[in-house]
Amino acid sequence: MREERVGDDLPDRDRTPGLGGLRRANTDNALRLHLVPALGARSMAAIRRNDIPVLFKHLSDQLGPGSVRNVYDVLVRVMTAAVDDKVIASSPCRRITLPAMPDEEVTPPSVEQVEAMARVMPPYIRAAIVTPTSDTFRPSSSPMRSRDPERGAAASRRGWCGP
Image (cartoon, rainbow, N blue to C red; front, side, top):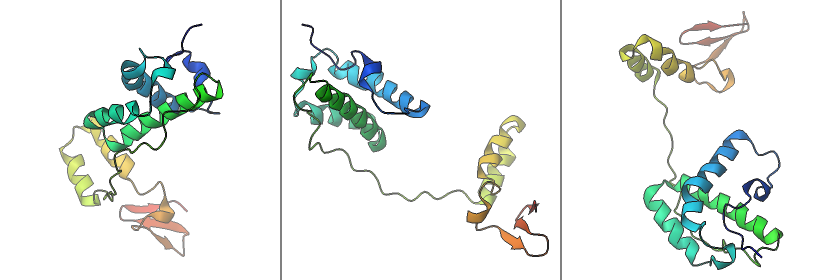
């Protein structure tokens, strides 16, 4: 009987319903770039709980905390599927301490900063800088908008945006 290894029979291992494109790409990258190179030569039964912190300490030297958690989540799904399939008795992914996620507040650039960036960019890139920062996508949440009671339109610093 052949021993199962991390990365064997991958399509059958991931049972997440409705696995979307981004999650599928994250799963593929985690397996291909990190888990299979580190664990793929060993049978799943040979992977012990104390091997997991060593692997993720090494990964945290190369990746940010969010990426480390993404790789860990993929390993948890693989090991959970292996337990469900009775390939291993229990998952080694229990009580593992991962790097702390920074609690940073993201401050978006001001309109003036975006306009300054757009001025120095070549014309073919300029729209890519201004479009994602436009306040026309979510008028209800923009602090730069107010309603014109007469026209029923939303006002922005750049002008009126529709009725």
